[in-house]
Length: 513
Image (cartoon, rainbow, N blue to C red; front, side, top):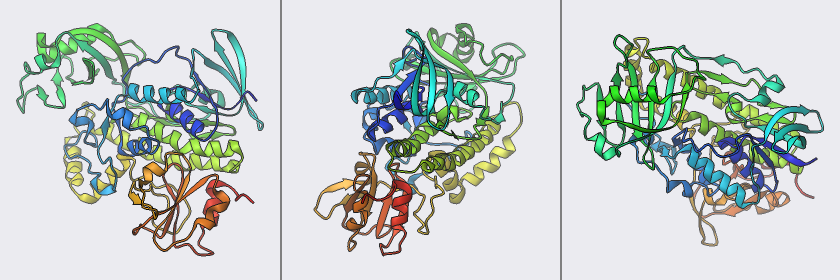
């Protein structure tokens, strides 16, 4: 074999996965067909759970220097309804969204990977794939021609139009969405935002209005008699602005390039001469399609990120789902490759992540309906707004959208089992101050015991895979076993038949003798 794992695609999911594999001691091969990073901003935010997982690897702090100061990227909303989703009761250090460009996330992850000696092989495209019970052979094409790379496993992070998914014949059911497309584009304007924002009326009933820390929003007519086009314009960074508008006046193909002329038409309709285009950096058309692969694993090939699911791009769900896919898969794949865990551990990746994406896709479909300007859904919006004011409804949707409410189907009787471990501050018995997030930085399992417990001997056979910490104070259980991805896989009172041994064996393999 040329390598243990091939990762195809250097987007957020692929780069996150590669970093997790390196942390576990592997040296993956990462292939990317684009010769250079696109630099396209794409998604604009990290969800609370995504911020937590990045923090648990020491990756969040470098991104906070590039945080966007936008109110719409702080609060979470459902379908644009006026009641924000409240995550404050979920014991997270990051109960709100963190505004960060996808391009910054990719830049940080690739830099982190390069610091370990693993470079992305850019300009290298997978053109064919063969797999059997022994391994995979990827046929790739780069500047040197066509050649083969062999590996024990391959992970497809090659995007919504995944070639690998098609080669495998994995069904990708779902919806293509309605006929009307939306446009997202990054633009540079002639005058800085401080100049042109002040020229826009700030009336509550105005068709176009400026809201501080939100930007411009409204509806305009691009042509006489055309259907109204909804648009928004927000400042990102380095004089770049994100323009989004609905393509209501005409029907075009999704692959038709976004042109400067149509961008100018929206800007002129929105504010006349106050907004003048200097440069169109990139533009893309998208609909409200939602699709999901029926299988996330086919033998030695696994799917992650957009290759596994595409979601109507509301609230950055695609990037956040992909990052969390990779975080769930990385430590499991590394354990199987290293031989410390059985092959069926990889089946839990599909079992855990497929239902999560399925729920997110359902929520995205519902939100697309609430935002549909072709139909009168105002009555539905009013009813749902009243329901969102109920704490129980708000809490449920907040947990779904933020990722903080995920519960994996992990066997166990304790109510903590399957939930994320909150990032609590701890004081060890030796008096050192630490936190759950800091203790997870090495990417290993973690057994935390509280006053009066003595579990060190119980995990001695897994000391190469599981860390042990004795903490003072009172926890939610006498002892808690946490997987490398931060989810509780056992909790309780240690006794001879408490299930701790079974949990250690299930998630970390057999004990060393």
